[in-house]
Amino acid sequence: MQTTNLDQLLFHLTLCKGIGATSRIRMLSSLIDDPRLTAHDLAKCAQLNSANKKLFLDSFAAIRIEESLDEYQKKQIKWVSILDKSYPEYLKHIYNPPALLFYQGNLTLLTGNLLAIVGSRLNSTYGEEALALLLPELITNNIITVSGLAKGIDQKAHKKTIELGGRTIAVIGTGLDQFYPFENEKLQRDIAKNHLLISEYPLGTKPLKQHFPMRNRIIAGLSLGTLVIEAKYRSGSLITANLALQEGREVFAVPGNITNPYSEGTNDLILHGAKSVLTAEHILEELNR
Image (cartoon, rainbow, N blue to C red; front, side, top):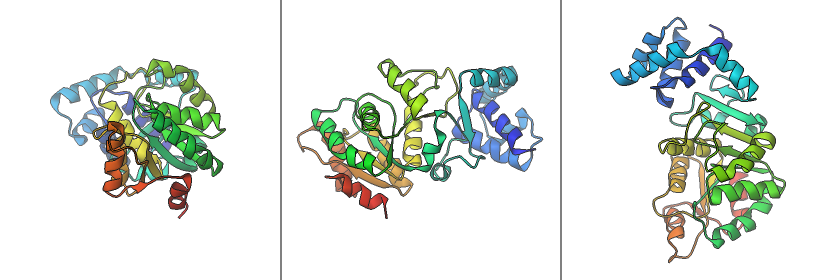
């Protein structure tokens, strides 16, 4: 079977219910070895339980692939699979990589120097001041920012990058036709048109809680390093930072007031080995090594 046919089959699998990222990678590995495998064979290869097997087989049979392809084309949504040369190399080597990424915008941004910037959804003025201090020099040095289009630091990192004339990548935990939070619709449309918007989830996928830790692994996996601006002791930002550490990437943290709960996470990261960041140069000297 040709790679293009495998890509189309992988697109089909990504639309199916009852399977996740790990199951799709298992199925893809099996298909590479034997392209003649049936949907029932793939369910067995992925070791699906009975409930998920039924969901998968029913949805696999119900999908009208040509209609689905037309829908994505009309909405100008493309995809890149792990089989493609344009699939980001850093992401390919993480634990549990997404088999397929849907995107809108400029895919070549993935070949640049990417820095993830994450932080609290309820950031303080200090967090905004830290962004305003660090971002201009990073943008001047052609750093492309990556974040999750969430409220707070994520949103402000995307907006500030755009205001400074930089380039940004947003990784979201929904389908590309969904806007979460809704207040980010204008920003999301701007990123999709002029920068790069990415998701591993098909059209129509709602913002389910379990999607966001999965999104975080992509943010960390795409990037040379991760900068945490503000974070509580237990937060999604720390999940992203820990994923970056597990993948051997650089982790940077802005130190904060020890009495501020939004600095507990960043200060703890520094205590356990993350690089304390006071200027943009502290980031650039690591990324340029």
